Length: 173
Image (cartoon, rainbow, N blue to C red; front, side, top):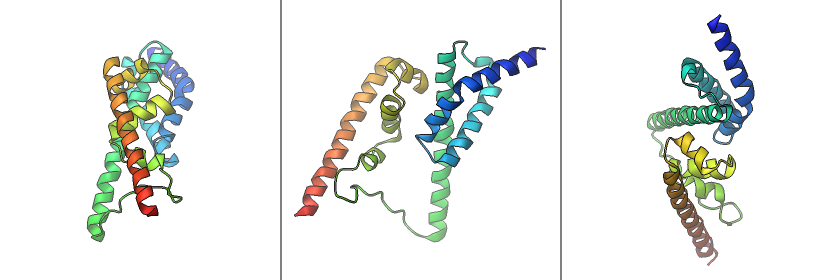
């Protein structure tokens, strides 16, 4: 009887959080990889179901934290695979473009130039629209650390965009 109650509770959790977890993953990776990640998130959550927070909002943040780790594992695996392919083909990796095709600063490439930690805190803030308190839960850090990291990430993003603008001006000459 206990396992049936657990399954029902987990089903409610899944139904109430699936769209949010999927959206979180889709904003960070391809559609196929996002669906794989979501499957893994709920598999991990099922294994750790005794640790699911009671409140729905906290449970959703807990799942986003799991999603963050799953996506990081996926990214590490993809980087290992890419290194293996490059070694096998003996071809160096191509650097990402620093400006868009029209020469204007490109936010996507500026963001890509930042560290994974900077990218994640900016995405949680602006794409997922989470308050600092919730970001702290997802990242497993203090609210004060969120504010500090966000400020530093914004500064580095501004610098990356400024560098692109300078490169654009230099290319025009």
